[in-house]
Length: 439
Image (cartoon, rainbow, N blue to C red):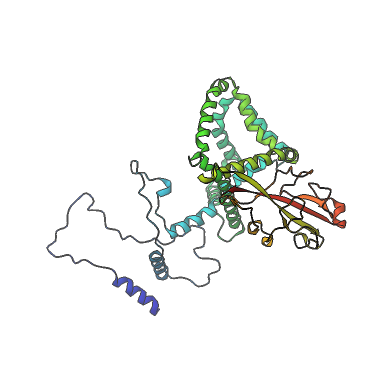
């Protein structure tokens, strides 16, 4: 208690008070009725139906201790002031409605976790329909409904009414109409609708897991789109070319758009993804599209690398160098570079035959592999080693990770390992490519 009293005395001593003389007259203005407010951080508001403390805490905390903790936390954490929000008739934007506060963030996150279940319930139902998880009857029913709406587009205006009627009928209480609307039933219905999962329960952790996965999906989508953003923001020389191609291709699209039938187009756009996500399509489409997607990925990566080139490298002579990664199968440890036999090719080689090793193997990581380049050449510093997923350098195709599998003697290449090789011995290799430039 001595330390808490010292802290309180220190806070009180730092406050400056102004002495008002007795002859002073208060000014009368428009806002004279408004009382001055002391700017301080608010405590964490209690959420109805949720515990205010952690399930692991056993000692009760007093209001004085919570207030002092909030004061100390506010004095320790200095949040930057947000930019002034634009006002339109006194209405703030949703993103700037409340100032940044650790207490408000904590309270809103707890509320969001307990109330976000309907969002993820709807997400799960949509995924079940699109991925055929509820069987063919459910997905086919939705396909028929969408086809009917495409044939009669004006029926889309009735969708809000149909949704509301479906919700009311689904929640209609059982029994006769006279006994359905008593005070007890209404109270029970309101209590059931307002009931939220409490913190620490299984449903609460299920909501937290869904939020976690949603944040990961949004981050993955952002990382996938980020490499292509420089082309749209005039940070690459290809932006002007993209604008020219887009404007030129827009002119012949005008008569084409007018001649395209609207109803079949909407039907194809809406039902196409459902046919693609069918289990049968998911089994055969990857094998059919794999050569095309590999080539597109390789060309897209090369376009991104060209955009990141320095100006001094644009007109210089560039060429590719190859690096080969070699591994051997072991029944005990699986695929590894440590199981390579003595006298055969090393873990990293620069010759396609595998007999010209490099200076350092980099402990198995391609980023740490070092070897000497020919005089007059240097690596492009904005690029790294790129895995060749397209293949074509051997008589056989490669798998999704660029590997070509061979027998114990590094012969008979195949895109998948054979069962008879596991007892006799098998090996694999793949190619890495990096560009060099003359200096």
